[in-house]
Length: 410
Ligand SMILES: *Cc1c(COP(=O)(O)O)cnc(C)c1O
Image (tube, rainbow, N blue to C red; front, side):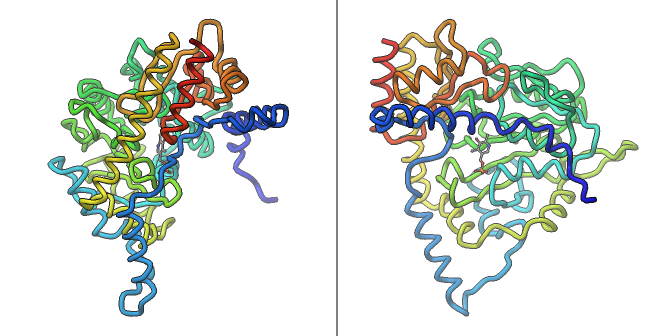
């Protein structure tokens, strides 16, 4: 009898995006004319083409593979030195990070899920609410939770509410937790964490022998020079944090696939009997056993993000998306709605008009404005009463969305 992993039966049936798709399909079937006007500002995927520098580098790499003198088979599981070195030089200069502390992968979604392989049972795990659902579901799958209640909250996780009152950066918990996921700039709220907020989290983690899993997928969108871009800008973070980064949102690699984790050699976990164990060799072993490296053309394309041309092209992409975010912020504010995020992140987090739930607002935007947004409650109970608008879109679409927001709420 082949036993299954019954933890999978605890998962809420991928509620958010399937339910959005169901409502959008019902709408388009019932309104074939209005359906032609539909603009999707829901899913957090980039829309603009790859930077030319990346595309050229991938072309060249494919040509190398087509020539016996330059052909390459399996590469190093942890990633090619040229990419690991370019990352350290361009993203972590002066922060004491070495190239062999960078592990290249095919995505941060996989990395943030797979990392749980190297942690033991019985950790108290803290996640923010609202949250990127991958952190929650991967903990459910591996057996770190009990069942969900009717609000979708899983027993065994410590939820840290993120609200306007705390600037969407959770207060330090008054209990001891062992692993904490932080994501700044944040998906879905678009919030950022200040240096002093991250200092408080690093102090907490060090005092409690906890580890911070820091997701900085949206680092490139930070505009404010005062904001920390990496957890490793905080003194002591190398002993209590790892950082997840991705080429998905800066280089537009959502379809190309390349990301990395930075795990300092100074980062320690503990055995049941309290002995220290470095995390770096555990992840190195896990990664080289279960992963055979990101493809050579993809790593060449990723390294081209750091070429002179690549930097300029990525900056232009970010500027375009952040211009969209500004327009969306202004339109929602002009409609009298409370607006958050969208200044250092490509997501605008908006309070629903009085009396409307997140799904009420979803339906209103769909039916009256023919715009698809993401209901905040889909990211966690504390997201109720909010919705997320993504700035990943063409300028023309964003301008039209802004006109429709004004017409619907003006
Ligand atoms: C988009 C995103 C990522 C990147 O995921 P990839 O698998 O690298 O495409 C990571 N974290 C968050 C919160 C994201 O929104």
